[in-house]
Image (tube, rainbow, N blue to C red; front, side, top):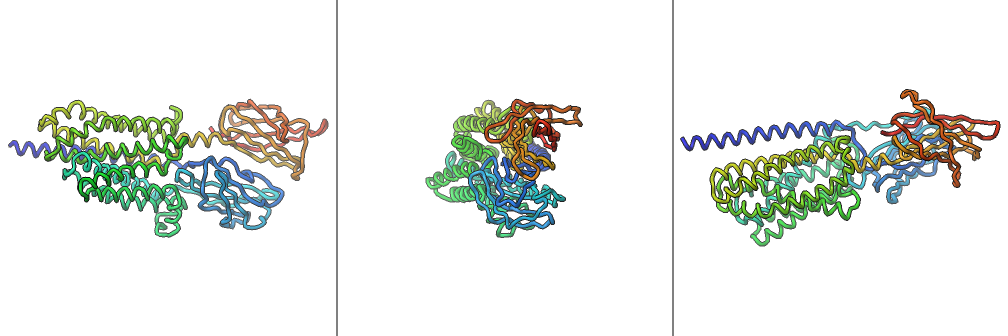
Length: 546
């Protein structure tokens, strides 16, 4: 009867774990669906273009200039002419945050679309288009849309989760087995399996990165250009370091004790280095702080998570040395968790910047989901530490079983956290969004007697400064006596706001201390007093961001 009760208890525990795993899988699927359903955001913001978006030029430009909020590398540059034909732009130069592009030849009159796809410093692709006209505007040529490839995004997310499992469960497990309990068989097969899964996941992640960078479907993953492109991004370094770390972890479990410790230590360092080589946090300023924090965070997670499954199996099977494993892990985990917490808080503060971004952005909501899972995880860890560890170390069989079950739940919760973190691949951090929001918006207003380039900085609702450059309708110099800015938004019931502009020494005019109350499409007009007897009025549309 006792044996039957024990068997029933084990089966019940397995059913409960299976149920919890199914629940966590459902939560992960929902979170990923929410992340995947959001549009692809740029992680580097386009700051300025020459020609300006919407500009009308007198003659064909001798070069195009794209300036971003951080350094980028061009992937695909295309010019679509008024006839709808697309030409690849292959002659360009990179200089910090600026990309200078040579036109293929003298361009025809009409409206053109300059389409770009670049890779940002954090390893994520950025795409967009700039529209300009020569002589006069014509019918806008069709620009390629950028639909979300759900299959590709799903593959990227899954490969990332499996890679995380290989790095944290696999390499972390090899480190703990080499340092805390050399010779303990529990969990060795699991760690090896995780690392063997991590190896193809790392390679697949590289190919998927190339597909995403070039905006190609999954079927094109065998193209050499895909792999060459991915290898040239910062994510290529992440994959290379991760592969080396996984191989070191596998060698550690097959080596003598002294060698195993050195190999597993190098593998653990490789986990931190791989994560610090690319990604949102690695690219955030100040990098002298963020990269070390990412390194410590990654290595700390690997130590903690890597010990969970071997410890659970050792306790469940009452393996010789399980009590020693538990005792050593209990002593080591507190300082590791302290480092994890400090590094995580520093990175979160840098990336989120303000508390409201936790709810206002997809990145913030995923961070809240991660924090909720971590709160539960820390709760289980606290119960294990202060209620079950002491009786388990004293040899109480019941405490061992309870502790094994609780540690198993910790491992499943850690896997759920990996799923949430993998969703960050598709969401820019609030820090990047703030940089983009601070960028100006520009519009070109063209009429028969006068035209103007108008720039509003920053380009979102609130206090702004407006810069104005005016010319004659045929691109000649214009020296007006006065300029008045007129802003209105009839659909919101906002009547014209009139502000006089002040002449600056460089030939521009400025309106300062202006508050734009709401976001949306505004009508921007200029009353240009050319002489005491001639007043020219021109107007255009400008989109103000929230």
